[in-house]
Length: 138
Image (spheres, rainbow, N blue to C red):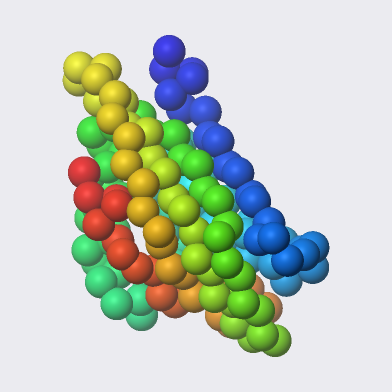
């Protein structure tokens, strides 16, 4: 059961309009890095692609730590909308979490529409906005 709970389900659904280019693939790898790190109970790795100037960065850090301490996490992320420019991508995601308590094994699920803005900084994509963050509240 723990192996199943630790497995990540990362669903990338294209919007009805079209195909993905290299930039969208790169930014989706960033989202995958966050989701995978949370599933692996590694909050510090989940924070790597998040810019420290992100509003509520410290709150998000505490949420990631609390969440990974209390639960085995499965993530499912679906792209609802994507808007790319040369140095920025705006994503609207349906982010679903399945949380299995490490103490009791009880499981619950939650999901939210999450808005993410990523910017290219020194050749790397960084998350500079992420709202709402309450989906990650333990």
